[in-house]
Structures are given as C-alpha cells and as structure tokens.
Image 1 (cartoon, rainbow, N blue to C red):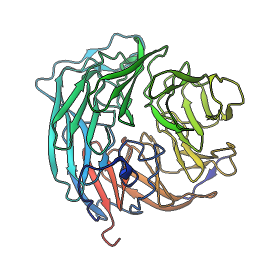
Image 2 (cartoon, helix red, strand yellow):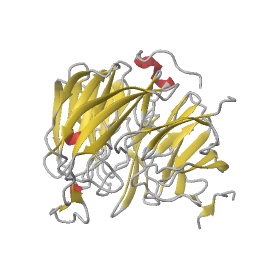
Image 3 (tube, rainbow, N blue to C red):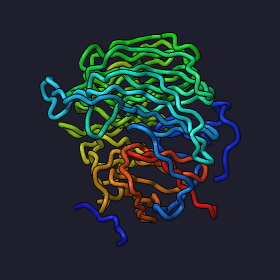
Length: 439
C-alpha cells in the first residue's frame, strides 16, 4: 500500500564567461552541473507565491518547454515564436498521429540571454525562420530541447531547425543542420545536446535512420557519427567519466548503448527498456541508472566497471525494477539515492543507488498531477513542480518531510534551474526568479 506524504491545507554573480571548472556553481545544462538534477552549491528558497520571494518575473515571447541554463550572470533560454497568417490546420496522416496537426504558421527560433540579477533581456537572437513540418505534442513545443554551455559559448538545439553555437554576446559562431526528423506519431522533438571536453553530442533517434553525432564544440566539425538501430526517443545523451574514459550513454528502445566520447566506438550495450524513451539516464559512483515506462515499466542500474559488449541479463546489471518507473520526468540522483516518479504522476519512489533497495516509501504526493518537469535538489531538499504551477518542497531522507507547498499562476513543464540563492522557473508565459531577500 502506498504511504501518504502529508500535504498541509541574490547576490549577482560577476562575469559571464569562465572556466568549466566553475560549472558546479552554475547550471550549465538542463540536469544541472552534475547531470543528476542536483545543485551542490545552491541554497534556493523553500517558500514562494506570486506575492512572496519573487525576485523578478518576465514574460517570454512565443512558446518553449526547454529549461533555462545559467553561467555567471547570464541565463539562456530558447523559444519559438509563431507569426504570420494562420491557415486551417492540416491533419497529420501518419498512422497513430491522433489529433496532432501540422503547423500552418511560420516560426522564428530564438535564443535569449537574460540578466540573472535584474531580469533584463540582454539580447534576443533569431537563429532560424521556418515552417515546422510537425506540430508536436500538447506537452511539448518547437523549442523543447534545452541549451548547454561551456562558459564560452551557448549551444542551442532546435532539432530539424539546426544546432547553433553562439558567443555570450549573441553572435552565431557556427551552425549545423542534420536533416528533417520524423518523430513517432508526429509528437515532436526534444533531445538536448550533451557537452564535455570540448565535444558536443547530439542524439537523433527518429522514424528514419537514427544516429548519434559528436562535433568539435569550437567549430561544429564532425568528429564521429554512428548509425543507431533505433526508433524515436526523446532521451538526451549522458556523458560520464569512468576510470579515465569518457562514455556517452544513450537510452534506446532496442538497446542502451555506451560510446567512447573520443572515437564513437561502442563500449557496451544492454537491452531491457520500453518503447518511447523519454527519461535521461543519471550516473554516479560507477553506476548508471536508466528508466522507462510506456508499454512496460523497466529501470536498470548498470555497473560500469567491467562493462563491455552485450551485458543484457548479466551481473553487470546491478539491480532492476519494474515498479513505478519514470516516463517523462528524468530521475534525480542525490545523497546516494535515486528518486523517481511513476510515469508522470505524483507517486514518488526512492532506491539506494548501489543496491536498489527500497527501504522506505513509496509516497503519494497528494495535490500534484501531470508532472513533466524533472525533480531537482539542493541544500538537502527536493523540488517537484507540476504542470499547474504547484511545487512541493521536502527534506530528503529515509522518511521525507514536507517543508512547503507553493503555487504560481503559470503552467510548468520545464525543469527548474538552481543557482546560488535563486530558483529559476520557466513557465508557459513567464520566467521567474525566486529568491528570499532575507538570505
């Protein structure tokens, strides 16, 4: 039986560019500086509302489900702005397309830089102008992939509209196009790029020939490209270092695969996930955790030490579970534990990273529903945001203790960013900076 979780009734950073060694102080990618959803140096507020602890709030143009990223005093967000005459919607003819429609308005694709201290827009760069070939899903947008930064450039990925490297003044340094993605059921695109050691990696799983491509971050030149026997997924690559070697781990329907970051060689593969992969893997202490939930529920913890070749159903799989696994929100890894939500619903589980033991829980998060944003953590607290502007904050431990229940007047599908004493929440209409002035 599910245990109930009781629900009751800034100092501005200086500079914008810097060394990647400073990454832990910022939020350089959509899952934070560690790729786990945790911010080791942040201490954001616990409580807020439209009338409390709103540092600033700005309206963003267009629509985007990408998460904000932060380096120094710069916040970067992407969005797509429809313009021009809207014609009658055209039904998508692909089998299983449901009620999706092709868009009949052109879009401008923007990368926006916001001052973290004031909320002023420092620059707004249109990088592409096109008529999208797919309308996407109601829970996504034409700007669902989150950007990433190395402290020198920001890399914004708009899928079929291209990948763009911009400097911190908003100038396009280089751009790349990968073709037209044909997503399953025309649900749209959303995989975010990964960046490490001056190499940027893009996953391109779709209904055509899928592939993964690694490029030089400085120039956009292809370093390697590997075809993938995969169908559409929305998971982002995870780059993890183990025993001095960097691996690119990508979850897929047919296989979870690990690629050598420098060469693209496949290191290991593992089967066992469902179709429609959305959640991005997390890793720490030599363990990679991968989860899925669609026609089946499956979560695997893979031990990297000794992993080579096909490791399906071997003892390299340290533990697995088919209970309450995640679909849209990715997992949170903090304090040697993995936290995850059932599908995209308000049921939270916690498992030990090394053993998979579930010594406590699960918990029903009464009042939260339709959770598309991934959980994040800082200062011993977990933050879970639902689509309807509600955020639950609790102290993580063997028995989580609720700290606050907060409400804002917007819809939230983007994962928050935690930096210093700020919480950044990107809604359907607004970008919020939440900060307690008394801290």
